[in-house]
Image (cartoon, rainbow, N blue to C red; front, side):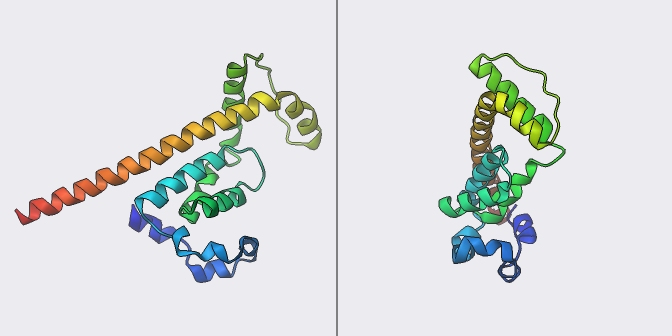
Length: 170
């Protein structure tokens, strides 16, 4: 897992060339944000999965700021936001809306999706409470599941490696 993450993590020199990242300041180059260990990666999964469910533009920036605040692996947190993409967004956000209506005991409305300002002003204005509640609940649950799953998988792999190493020497 470590080698896979290391392989796809951009180098600091490449990051310094990115003008868009300059708004995060020099803190973005802190070594703590680039560590590849069980705690940093698990925290990055929690941050990235939660931010993926936040229905705002520029989720990557939100994930980057959260990674800075919680000092977790920045590239993993930002990459996980891409779970929400143009193909996955409609079913994800509809499921969040559905869950929100169940929690609030609201009536589920048929929504004819149209990505326009008029639609956002009218339809989203009517369904925002169940939609945001569903996003918050699913984001929190997926964040916790991601965090503990990474912790468990990492520990499991470490124990297996140690057992194999022990078997070689006995």
